[in-house]
Length: 296
Length: 270
Image (tube, each protein chain N blue to C red):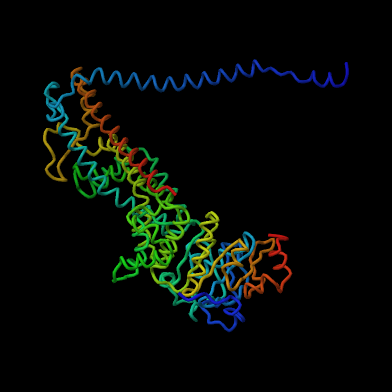
Protein backbone atom coordinates (compact mmCIF):
# COMPACT_ATOMS: atom_id res chain seq x y z
CA UNK A 1 0.00 0.00 0.00
CA UNK A 2 1.38 3.34 -0.98
CA UNK A 3 1.71 6.15 1.52
CA UNK A 4 -1.00 8.20 -0.23
CA UNK A 5 -3.53 5.36 0.01
CA UNK A 6 -2.65 4.76 3.66
CA UNK A 7 -3.19 8.46 4.33
CA UNK A 8 -6.60 8.36 2.67
CA UNK A 9 -7.62 5.31 4.73
CA UNK A 10 -7.31 7.36 7.89
CA UNK A 11 -10.40 9.39 6.90
CA UNK A 12 -13.71 7.60 7.43
CA UNK A 13 -16.45 9.95 6.31
CA UNK A 14 -19.82 8.87 7.77
CA UNK A 15 -22.03 11.31 5.87
CA UNK A 16 -25.16 9.19 6.31
CA UNK A 17 -24.80 9.15 10.10
CA UNK A 18 -24.14 12.88 10.25
CA UNK A 19 -27.16 13.60 8.10
CA UNK A 20 -29.24 11.37 10.38
CA UNK A 21 -28.28 13.33 13.49
CA UNK A 22 -29.11 16.54 11.63
CA UNK A 23 -32.57 15.23 10.80
CA UNK A 24 -33.04 14.08 14.40
CA UNK A 25 -32.25 17.57 15.64
CA UNK A 26 -34.72 19.10 13.19
CA UNK A 27 -37.36 16.65 14.38
CA UNK A 28 -36.74 17.65 17.99
CA UNK A 29 -37.17 21.31 17.04
CA UNK A 30 -40.48 20.55 15.30
CA UNK A 31 -41.64 18.57 18.32
CA UNK A 32 -40.73 21.35 20.74
CA UNK A 33 -42.63 23.90 18.66
CA UNK A 34 -45.60 21.55 18.33
CA UNK A 35 -45.82 21.04 22.11
CA UNK A 36 -45.97 24.78 22.66
CA UNK A 37 -48.54 25.44 19.96
CA UNK A 38 -50.62 22.41 20.90
CA UNK A 39 -50.80 23.49 24.54
CA UNK A 40 -51.92 26.95 23.45
CA UNK A 41 -54.51 25.59 21.02
CA UNK A 42 -55.94 23.21 23.63
CA UNK A 43 -56.19 25.98 26.20
CA UNK A 44 -57.79 28.39 23.76
CA UNK A 45 -60.19 25.79 22.40
CA UNK A 46 -61.20 24.71 25.90
CA UNK A 47 -61.80 28.33 26.94
CA UNK A 48 -63.71 29.14 23.75
CA UNK A 49 -65.93 26.07 23.98
CA UNK A 50 -66.75 26.73 27.62
CA UNK A 51 -66.91 30.49 27.43
CA UNK A 52 -68.37 31.41 24.06
CA UNK A 53 -72.00 30.49 24.88
CA UNK A 54 -71.92 32.83 27.89
CA UNK A 55 -70.87 35.86 25.87
CA UNK A 56 -73.64 38.36 25.41
CA UNK A 57 -74.29 42.05 25.71
CA UNK A 58 -76.01 41.36 29.00
CA UNK A 59 -72.87 39.60 30.27
CA UNK A 60 -70.81 42.71 29.56
CA UNK A 61 -73.27 45.11 31.15
CA UNK A 62 -74.35 43.33 34.33
CA UNK A 63 -72.94 43.35 37.80
CA UNK A 64 -71.79 40.10 39.42
CA UNK A 65 -74.56 38.16 41.12
CA UNK A 66 -75.04 35.15 43.33
CA UNK A 67 -76.47 33.45 40.28
CA UNK A 68 -74.03 32.65 37.49
CA UNK A 69 -76.56 33.23 34.71
CA UNK A 70 -77.28 36.77 35.95
CA UNK A 71 -73.63 37.65 36.57
CA UNK A 72 -71.79 40.10 34.43
CA UNK A 73 -68.47 41.84 33.93
CA UNK A 74 -69.49 45.48 34.19
CA UNK A 75 -67.72 46.26 37.47
CA UNK A 76 -64.57 44.44 36.39
CA UNK A 77 -64.48 46.07 32.95
CA UNK A 78 -64.93 49.56 34.32
CA UNK A 79 -62.45 48.86 37.12
CA UNK A 80 -59.87 47.63 34.60
CA UNK A 81 -60.44 50.71 32.46
CA UNK A 82 -59.96 53.07 35.41
CA UNK A 83 -56.83 51.23 36.56
CA UNK A 84 -55.44 51.51 33.01
CA UNK A 85 -56.16 55.26 32.97
CA UNK A 86 -54.38 55.74 36.30
CA UNK A 87 -51.42 53.67 35.08
CA UNK A 88 -51.13 55.75 31.89
CA UNK A 89 -51.49 59.02 33.78
CA UNK A 90 -48.83 58.10 36.34
CA UNK A 91 -46.37 55.73 34.68
CA UNK A 92 -46.27 57.40 31.27
CA UNK A 93 -45.00 60.87 32.30
CA UNK A 94 -42.72 59.60 35.07
CA UNK A 95 -41.33 56.83 32.87
CA UNK A 96 -40.67 59.05 29.88
CA UNK A 97 -39.14 61.80 31.98
CA UNK A 98 -36.84 59.28 33.68
CA UNK A 99 -35.83 57.83 30.33
CA UNK A 100 -35.13 61.27 28.86
CA UNK A 101 -33.01 62.18 31.87
CA UNK A 102 -31.05 58.91 31.72
CA UNK A 103 -30.54 59.00 27.95
CA UNK A 104 -30.11 62.67 27.21
CA UNK A 105 -28.70 64.25 30.35
CA UNK A 106 -26.70 61.73 32.39
CA UNK A 107 -23.33 61.09 30.80
CA UNK A 108 -22.23 57.46 30.66
CA UNK A 109 -20.48 56.51 33.84
CA UNK A 110 -20.95 54.68 37.14
CA UNK A 111 -24.11 56.61 38.11
CA UNK A 112 -25.91 55.74 34.90
CA UNK A 113 -24.71 52.15 35.03
CA UNK A 114 -25.95 51.67 38.60
CA UNK A 115 -29.34 53.23 37.82
CA UNK A 116 -29.84 51.23 34.64
CA UNK A 117 -28.86 47.95 36.28
CA UNK A 118 -31.32 48.56 39.08
CA UNK A 119 -34.15 49.54 36.77
CA UNK A 120 -33.44 46.36 34.85
CA UNK A 121 -33.63 44.38 38.09
CA UNK A 122 -36.89 46.07 39.09
CA UNK A 123 -38.43 45.00 35.77
CA UNK A 124 -37.73 41.41 36.78
CA UNK A 125 -39.16 41.55 40.31
CA UNK A 126 -42.22 39.24 40.68
CA UNK A 127 -45.46 41.20 40.55
CA UNK A 128 -46.66 39.90 43.93
CA UNK A 129 -43.78 41.83 45.51
CA UNK A 130 -45.20 45.01 44.01
CA UNK A 131 -48.54 44.02 45.51
CA UNK A 132 -46.92 43.83 48.95
CA UNK A 133 -45.26 47.19 48.35
CA UNK A 134 -48.59 48.70 47.33
CA UNK A 135 -50.27 47.21 50.38
CA UNK A 136 -47.64 48.62 52.72
CA UNK A 137 -47.21 52.02 51.09
CA UNK A 138 -50.47 53.00 49.41
CA UNK A 139 -53.08 51.04 51.37
CA UNK A 140 -51.54 51.36 54.83
CA UNK A 141 -48.93 54.14 55.06
CA UNK A 142 -50.79 56.61 52.83
CA UNK A 143 -54.14 55.25 54.10
CA UNK A 144 -55.69 55.06 50.67
CA UNK A 145 -57.45 51.88 51.85
CA UNK A 146 -58.24 49.17 49.32
CA UNK A 147 -59.14 51.75 46.74
CA UNK A 148 -59.00 52.20 43.00
CA UNK A 149 -56.22 54.74 43.47
CA UNK A 150 -54.10 52.34 45.55
CA UNK A 151 -54.55 49.60 42.92
CA UNK A 152 -53.80 51.90 39.99
CA UNK A 153 -50.69 53.31 41.65
CA UNK A 154 -49.44 49.81 42.47
CA UNK A 155 -49.80 48.70 38.85
CA UNK A 156 -48.19 51.98 37.72
CA UNK A 157 -45.14 51.25 39.88
CA UNK A 158 -45.11 47.71 38.52
CA UNK A 159 -44.90 48.83 34.87
CA UNK A 160 -42.69 51.87 35.48
CA UNK A 161 -39.36 50.05 34.96
CA UNK A 162 -40.66 48.50 31.74
CA UNK A 163 -41.86 51.88 30.48
CA UNK A 164 -38.46 53.44 31.29
CA UNK A 165 -36.52 50.69 29.55
CA UNK A 166 -38.74 50.82 26.45
CA UNK A 167 -38.59 54.60 26.28
CA UNK A 168 -34.81 54.53 26.63
CA UNK A 169 -34.57 52.14 23.71
CA UNK A 170 -36.83 54.36 21.61
CA UNK A 171 -34.70 57.42 22.45
CA UNK A 172 -31.50 55.55 21.66
CA UNK A 173 -32.90 54.70 18.23
CA UNK A 174 -33.17 58.39 17.30
CA UNK A 175 -30.23 59.08 14.98
CA UNK A 176 -27.60 61.33 16.54
CA UNK A 177 -27.49 63.38 13.31
CA UNK A 178 -30.88 64.78 14.31
CA UNK A 179 -29.56 66.02 17.65
CA UNK A 180 -26.42 67.45 16.04
CA UNK A 181 -28.45 69.31 13.40
CA UNK A 182 -30.54 70.91 16.11
CA UNK A 183 -27.61 71.84 18.38
CA UNK A 184 -25.75 73.30 15.40
CA UNK A 185 -28.58 75.78 14.87
CA UNK A 186 -28.15 77.11 18.40
CA UNK A 187 -30.89 75.06 20.01
CA UNK A 188 -30.60 74.25 23.70
CA UNK A 189 -30.74 70.69 24.94
CA UNK A 190 -34.38 71.08 25.97
CA UNK A 191 -35.36 72.53 22.57
CA UNK A 192 -33.58 69.68 20.85
CA UNK A 193 -35.40 67.10 22.97
CA UNK A 194 -38.79 68.76 22.70
CA UNK A 195 -38.80 69.52 18.97
CA UNK A 196 -36.81 66.65 17.54
CA UNK A 197 -35.85 63.80 19.85
CA UNK A 198 -39.20 63.21 21.57
CA UNK A 199 -41.35 63.46 18.41
CA UNK A 200 -39.04 61.02 16.63
CA UNK A 201 -39.06 58.61 19.58
CA UNK A 202 -42.76 58.94 20.42
CA UNK A 203 -44.13 56.04 18.34
CA UNK A 204 -41.53 53.73 19.87
CA UNK A 205 -42.30 55.00 23.35
CA UNK A 206 -46.05 54.52 22.77
CA UNK A 207 -45.53 50.99 21.50
CA UNK A 208 -43.51 50.07 24.57
CA UNK A 209 -46.01 51.66 26.90
CA UNK A 210 -49.00 49.90 25.36
CA UNK A 211 -47.22 46.55 25.58
CA UNK A 212 -46.37 47.25 29.22
CA UNK A 213 -49.96 48.27 29.90
CA UNK A 214 -51.37 45.16 28.24
CA UNK A 215 -49.17 43.10 30.52
CA UNK A 216 -50.28 45.11 33.52
CA UNK A 217 -54.03 44.74 33.05
CA UNK A 218 -53.62 40.97 32.91
CA UNK A 219 -51.87 40.94 36.29
CA UNK A 220 -53.93 39.49 39.14
CA UNK A 221 -51.24 38.89 41.74
CA UNK A 222 -50.57 42.43 43.00
CA UNK A 223 -54.26 43.36 42.98
CA UNK A 224 -55.22 40.28 45.00
CA UNK A 225 -53.39 41.95 47.86
CA UNK A 226 -54.86 45.39 47.22
CA UNK A 227 -58.45 44.91 46.16
CA UNK A 228 -60.92 43.60 48.71
CA UNK A 229 -61.67 40.39 46.88
CA UNK A 230 -65.28 40.82 47.72
CA UNK A 231 -68.52 41.04 45.93
CA UNK A 232 -68.34 44.32 44.01
CA UNK A 233 -71.73 45.09 42.53
CA UNK A 234 -71.28 48.80 41.93
CA UNK A 235 -69.06 51.13 39.93
CA UNK A 236 -66.42 53.21 41.70
CA UNK A 237 -67.63 56.79 42.14
CA UNK A 238 -64.31 58.19 43.21
CA UNK A 239 -60.65 57.26 43.24
CA UNK A 240 -61.05 56.09 46.84
CA UNK A 241 -63.85 53.58 46.19
CA UNK A 242 -63.21 49.87 46.19
CA UNK A 243 -62.94 48.20 42.81
CA UNK A 244 -62.36 44.97 40.98
CA UNK A 245 -60.60 44.12 37.72
CA UNK A 246 -60.99 41.38 35.13
CA UNK A 247 -58.29 38.96 36.36
CA UNK A 248 -59.66 39.21 39.91
CA UNK A 249 -63.23 38.60 38.75
CA UNK A 250 -61.99 35.55 36.84
CA UNK A 251 -60.11 34.37 39.92
CA UNK A 252 -63.23 34.71 42.07
CA UNK A 253 -65.48 32.84 39.65
CA UNK A 254 -62.97 30.06 39.08
CA UNK A 255 -62.65 29.48 42.84
CA UNK A 256 -66.40 28.92 43.20
CA UNK A 257 -67.56 25.32 43.36
CA UNK A 258 -70.40 25.59 40.80
CA UNK A 259 -69.61 24.65 37.19
CA UNK A 260 -71.82 27.50 35.91
CA UNK A 261 -69.37 30.01 37.41
CA UNK A 262 -66.47 28.21 35.74
CA UNK A 263 -68.22 28.73 32.41
CA UNK A 264 -68.66 32.47 32.89
CA UNK A 265 -65.02 32.65 34.07
CA UNK A 266 -64.12 31.24 30.66
CA UNK A 267 -66.29 33.92 29.03
CA UNK A 268 -64.44 36.58 31.03
CA UNK A 269 -61.11 35.10 29.92
CA UNK A 270 -62.21 35.52 26.30
CA UNK A 271 -63.06 39.18 26.97
CA UNK A 272 -59.67 39.74 28.63
CA UNK A 273 -57.85 38.02 25.74
CA UNK A 274 -59.66 40.14 23.15
CA UNK A 275 -58.67 43.29 25.06
CA UNK A 276 -55.02 42.27 25.28
CA UNK A 277 -54.79 41.21 21.64
CA UNK A 278 -56.40 44.47 20.54
CA UNK A 279 -53.87 46.49 22.55
CA UNK A 280 -50.96 44.49 21.17
CA UNK A 281 -52.29 44.96 17.64
CA UNK A 282 -52.45 48.73 18.17
CA UNK A 283 -48.86 48.64 19.44
CA UNK A 284 -47.69 46.70 16.38
CA UNK A 285 -49.45 49.08 13.97
CA UNK A 286 -47.84 52.06 15.72
CA UNK A 287 -44.42 50.44 15.55
CA UNK A 288 -44.74 49.68 11.85
CA UNK A 289 -45.84 53.21 11.07
CA UNK A 290 -42.90 54.55 13.06
CA UNK A 291 -40.51 52.31 11.12
CA UNK A 292 -41.77 53.66 7.82
CA UNK A 293 -41.92 57.24 9.05
CA UNK A 294 -38.58 58.20 10.57
CA UNK A 295 -36.19 55.86 8.86
CA UNK A 296 -32.92 57.44 7.90
CA UNK B 1 -23.79 89.85 -8.50
CA UNK B 2 -20.11 90.65 -8.46
CA UNK B 3 -17.77 88.28 -10.22
CA UNK B 4 -15.49 86.53 -7.71
CA UNK B 5 -12.01 87.96 -7.69
CA UNK B 6 -9.26 85.66 -8.87
CA UNK B 7 -7.96 83.63 -5.98
CA UNK B 8 -4.40 84.91 -6.38
CA UNK B 9 -5.51 88.48 -5.76
CA UNK B 10 -7.76 87.57 -2.90
CA UNK B 11 -5.07 85.71 -1.04
CA UNK B 12 -1.55 86.94 -1.17
CA UNK B 13 -0.60 86.82 2.46
CA UNK B 14 -3.01 85.16 4.92
CA UNK B 15 -1.49 87.15 7.77
CA UNK B 16 -2.91 90.37 6.31
CA UNK B 17 -6.48 89.12 6.12
CA UNK B 18 -9.08 89.95 8.72
CA UNK B 19 -9.55 86.94 11.01
CA UNK B 20 -12.62 85.12 12.25
CA UNK B 21 -10.96 82.38 14.26
CA UNK B 22 -7.55 82.28 15.84
CA UNK B 23 -6.36 78.87 16.99
CA UNK B 24 -3.51 78.95 19.49
CA UNK B 25 -1.97 75.71 20.67
CA UNK B 26 -5.23 73.77 20.42
CA UNK B 27 -5.02 70.18 21.69
CA UNK B 28 -7.96 67.83 22.02
CA UNK B 29 -8.62 64.49 23.69
CA UNK B 30 -11.37 61.87 23.56
CA UNK B 31 -10.92 60.26 26.97
CA UNK B 32 -7.26 59.26 27.12
CA UNK B 33 -6.69 59.36 23.36
CA UNK B 34 -5.25 62.60 22.05
CA UNK B 35 -6.82 63.61 18.74
CA UNK B 36 -5.12 66.95 18.10
CA UNK B 37 -1.80 68.41 19.22
CA UNK B 38 -0.85 72.05 19.39
CA UNK B 39 -2.74 73.38 16.37
CA UNK B 40 -2.02 77.04 15.64
CA UNK B 41 -3.34 79.00 12.65
CA UNK B 42 -5.83 81.71 11.73
CA UNK B 43 -9.04 81.36 9.76
CA UNK B 44 -9.72 84.49 7.70
CA UNK B 45 -12.99 86.30 7.13
CA UNK B 46 -14.98 85.85 3.90
CA UNK B 47 -12.64 83.21 2.55
CA UNK B 48 -12.95 79.48 2.09
CA UNK B 49 -10.52 77.61 4.29
CA UNK B 50 -10.10 73.92 3.54
CA UNK B 51 -8.85 71.37 6.04
CA UNK B 52 -7.36 68.35 4.29
CA UNK B 53 -5.55 65.24 5.38
CA UNK B 54 -5.89 61.45 5.41
CA UNK B 55 -8.60 59.64 7.40
CA UNK B 56 -8.19 59.81 11.17
CA UNK B 57 -5.94 62.87 11.14
CA UNK B 58 -8.36 64.91 13.25
CA UNK B 59 -9.96 67.07 10.52
CA UNK B 60 -13.47 66.56 11.85
CA UNK B 61 -12.34 67.00 15.45
CA UNK B 62 -10.74 70.29 14.46
CA UNK B 63 -13.79 71.72 12.68
CA UNK B 64 -16.04 70.58 15.54
CA UNK B 65 -13.83 72.50 17.97
CA UNK B 66 -14.84 75.70 16.19
CA UNK B 67 -18.51 75.48 17.24
CA UNK B 68 -17.97 73.30 20.31
CA UNK B 69 -19.95 70.42 18.83
CA UNK B 70 -17.39 68.12 20.45
CA UNK B 71 -18.87 69.09 23.81
CA UNK B 72 -21.67 66.63 22.99
CA UNK B 73 -19.22 63.73 23.02
CA UNK B 74 -18.67 62.34 26.53
CA UNK B 75 -15.03 62.39 27.54
CA UNK B 76 -14.02 65.19 25.16
CA UNK B 77 -11.52 67.75 26.45
CA UNK B 78 -9.77 70.66 24.76
CA UNK B 79 -6.75 72.71 25.77
CA UNK B 80 -5.25 75.83 24.29
CA UNK B 81 -7.22 78.73 22.88
CA UNK B 82 -9.70 79.18 20.08
CA UNK B 83 -10.93 82.74 19.69
CA UNK B 84 -13.92 83.74 17.60
CA UNK B 85 -13.86 87.49 16.88
CA UNK B 86 -11.32 87.83 19.70
CA UNK B 87 -13.40 85.98 22.28
CA UNK B 88 -12.14 82.71 23.72
CA UNK B 89 -14.87 80.18 22.88
CA UNK B 90 -13.55 77.76 25.50
CA UNK B 91 -13.36 80.52 28.11
CA UNK B 92 -15.54 80.55 31.24
CA UNK B 93 -17.89 83.22 29.84
CA UNK B 94 -18.50 81.46 26.51
CA UNK B 95 -21.91 79.99 25.84
CA UNK B 96 -21.92 77.22 23.21
CA UNK B 97 -25.62 77.77 22.45
CA UNK B 98 -25.06 81.44 21.53
CA UNK B 99 -21.87 80.55 19.69
CA UNK B 100 -23.58 77.98 17.46
CA UNK B 101 -26.27 80.47 16.59
CA UNK B 102 -23.58 82.47 14.76
CA UNK B 103 -21.70 79.51 13.36
CA UNK B 104 -23.70 77.32 11.00
CA UNK B 105 -22.74 73.72 10.40
CA UNK B 106 -23.35 71.29 7.56
CA UNK B 107 -22.67 67.63 8.20
CA UNK B 108 -21.21 64.78 6.23
CA UNK B 109 -24.49 62.92 5.91
CA UNK B 110 -27.46 65.11 4.97
CA UNK B 111 -29.56 65.26 8.14
CA UNK B 112 -32.80 67.14 7.51
CA UNK B 113 -35.33 66.99 10.31
CA UNK B 114 -38.18 64.54 9.64
CA UNK B 115 -40.43 67.55 9.12
CA UNK B 116 -41.58 69.63 6.16
CA UNK B 117 -39.10 71.55 3.99
CA UNK B 118 -40.56 74.78 5.39
CA UNK B 119 -40.22 73.70 9.03
CA UNK B 120 -36.68 72.50 8.44
CA UNK B 121 -35.64 76.02 7.45
CA UNK B 122 -37.92 77.82 9.91
CA UNK B 123 -36.78 75.90 13.01
CA UNK B 124 -33.58 77.94 13.53
CA UNK B 125 -35.23 81.37 13.22
CA UNK B 126 -38.11 80.21 15.45
CA UNK B 127 -35.98 79.06 18.38
CA UNK B 128 -33.72 82.08 18.03
CA UNK B 129 -36.65 84.41 18.50
CA UNK B 130 -37.03 85.74 14.95
CA UNK B 131 -40.17 87.89 14.82
CA UNK B 132 -40.20 88.98 11.17
CA UNK B 133 -41.88 87.38 8.19
CA UNK B 134 -41.02 83.68 8.36
CA UNK B 135 -41.99 83.10 4.71
CA UNK B 136 -39.41 85.63 3.57
CA UNK B 137 -36.66 84.00 5.62
CA UNK B 138 -37.52 80.54 4.33
CA UNK B 139 -37.69 81.66 0.72
CA UNK B 140 -34.53 83.75 1.01
CA UNK B 141 -32.57 80.92 2.61
CA UNK B 142 -33.75 78.39 0.05
CA UNK B 143 -32.84 80.80 -2.75
CA UNK B 144 -29.36 81.32 -1.31
CA UNK B 145 -28.92 77.56 -1.22
CA UNK B 146 -30.13 77.38 -4.88
CA UNK B 147 -32.95 75.04 -3.88
CA UNK B 148 -35.96 77.34 -4.09
CA UNK B 149 -36.96 76.54 -7.69
CA UNK B 150 -36.91 72.83 -6.96
CA UNK B 151 -38.97 72.93 -3.76
CA UNK B 152 -41.16 76.04 -3.99
CA UNK B 153 -44.21 73.91 -4.85
CA UNK B 154 -43.60 71.33 -2.15
CA UNK B 155 -42.66 73.29 0.96
CA UNK B 156 -45.07 71.10 2.92
CA UNK B 157 -43.53 67.76 1.98
CA UNK B 158 -41.03 66.03 4.22
CA UNK B 159 -37.40 67.06 3.89
CA UNK B 160 -36.61 63.36 3.77
CA UNK B 161 -38.49 63.02 0.46
CA UNK B 162 -35.84 65.07 -1.38
CA UNK B 163 -32.83 63.59 -3.17
CA UNK B 164 -29.49 63.39 -1.36
CA UNK B 165 -28.09 66.50 -3.05
CA UNK B 166 -31.30 68.44 -2.42
CA UNK B 167 -31.28 67.32 1.22
CA UNK B 168 -27.75 68.66 1.62
CA UNK B 169 -28.76 71.99 0.06
CA UNK B 170 -31.76 72.01 2.41
CA UNK B 171 -29.32 71.58 5.30
CA UNK B 172 -27.30 74.50 3.95
CA UNK B 173 -30.47 76.62 3.65
CA UNK B 174 -31.39 75.63 7.21
CA UNK B 175 -27.96 76.76 8.43
CA UNK B 176 -28.21 80.06 6.49
CA UNK B 177 -31.68 80.83 7.87
CA UNK B 178 -30.31 82.01 11.23
CA UNK B 179 -28.01 84.47 9.39
CA UNK B 180 -24.74 83.00 10.58
CA UNK B 181 -21.36 84.57 10.18
CA UNK B 182 -19.42 81.38 9.56
CA UNK B 183 -20.38 78.17 7.80
CA UNK B 184 -18.59 75.01 8.86
CA UNK B 185 -18.86 72.11 6.41
CA UNK B 186 -17.69 68.67 7.47
CA UNK B 187 -17.14 66.68 4.25
CA UNK B 188 -20.44 68.00 2.85
CA UNK B 189 -20.14 66.13 -0.45
CA UNK B 190 -18.86 62.75 0.64
CA UNK B 191 -22.33 61.19 0.50
CA UNK B 192 -23.25 62.80 -2.85
CA UNK B 193 -22.84 61.90 -6.51
CA UNK B 194 -20.55 64.00 -8.77
CA UNK B 195 -23.35 66.21 -10.13
CA UNK B 196 -24.73 67.02 -6.68
CA UNK B 197 -21.13 67.58 -5.54
CA UNK B 198 -20.57 70.04 -8.38
CA UNK B 199 -23.67 72.01 -7.42
CA UNK B 200 -22.60 72.22 -3.77
CA UNK B 201 -19.11 73.35 -4.79
CA UNK B 202 -20.59 76.09 -6.96
CA UNK B 203 -22.74 77.12 -4.03
CA UNK B 204 -19.70 77.26 -1.69
CA UNK B 205 -17.84 79.55 -4.08
CA UNK B 206 -20.92 81.77 -4.28
CA UNK B 207 -21.48 81.88 -0.52
CA UNK B 208 -17.85 82.75 0.19
CA UNK B 209 -18.59 86.38 -0.76
CA UNK B 210 -20.70 86.84 2.34
CA UNK B 211 -19.65 84.10 4.70
CA UNK B 212 -16.47 82.76 6.17
CA UNK B 213 -16.43 79.10 5.22
CA UNK B 214 -14.40 76.26 6.68
CA UNK B 215 -14.64 72.99 4.79
CA UNK B 216 -13.23 69.62 5.75
CA UNK B 217 -12.60 67.40 2.78
CA UNK B 218 -10.66 64.28 1.97
CA UNK B 219 -10.91 65.21 -1.71
CA UNK B 220 -7.85 67.22 -2.68
CA UNK B 221 -9.31 68.29 -6.02
CA UNK B 222 -12.26 69.72 -4.13
CA UNK B 223 -9.95 71.63 -1.79
CA UNK B 224 -8.03 73.06 -4.74
CA UNK B 225 -11.26 73.96 -6.58
CA UNK B 226 -13.17 75.73 -3.82
CA UNK B 227 -10.74 77.01 -1.21
CA UNK B 228 -8.57 80.08 -0.85
CA UNK B 229 -6.51 78.69 1.99
CA UNK B 230 -5.67 75.15 2.96
CA UNK B 231 -4.55 73.56 6.20
CA UNK B 232 -2.95 70.13 5.92
CA UNK B 233 -3.18 67.85 8.96
CA UNK B 234 -1.38 64.58 9.49
CA UNK B 235 -1.45 62.02 12.29
CA UNK B 236 1.30 59.62 13.20
CA UNK B 237 1.07 56.09 14.61
CA UNK B 238 -0.62 57.31 17.79
CA UNK B 239 -3.36 58.99 15.67
CA UNK B 240 -2.84 62.46 17.07
CA UNK B 241 -3.33 65.07 14.37
CA UNK B 242 -0.84 67.87 13.89
CA UNK B 243 -0.81 70.80 11.51
CA UNK B 244 1.82 70.22 8.86
CA UNK B 245 1.27 73.22 6.68
CA UNK B 246 -1.13 76.12 6.26
CA UNK B 247 -1.17 78.67 3.47
CA UNK B 248 -2.84 79.89 0.30
CA UNK B 249 -4.27 76.88 -1.50
CA UNK B 250 -2.43 77.63 -4.73
CA UNK B 251 0.93 77.77 -3.01
CA UNK B 252 0.25 74.65 -0.96
CA UNK B 253 -0.67 72.66 -4.03
CA UNK B 254 2.03 74.02 -6.39
CA UNK B 255 5.02 74.50 -4.14
CA UNK B 256 4.43 72.87 -0.77
CA UNK B 257 6.91 73.85 1.90
CA UNK B 258 6.89 70.51 3.66
CA UNK B 259 7.85 67.28 2.00
CA UNK B 260 5.01 65.43 3.76
CA UNK B 261 2.53 67.82 2.11
CA UNK B 262 4.12 67.15 -1.22
CA UNK B 263 3.99 63.40 -0.64
CA UNK B 264 0.29 63.64 0.26
CA UNK B 265 -0.87 65.87 -2.58
CA UNK B 266 1.02 63.83 -5.14
CA UNK B 267 -0.68 60.72 -3.81
CA UNK B 268 2.33 58.95 -2.42
CA UNK B 269 0.57 58.18 0.85
CA UNK B 270 -2.69 58.78 2.64
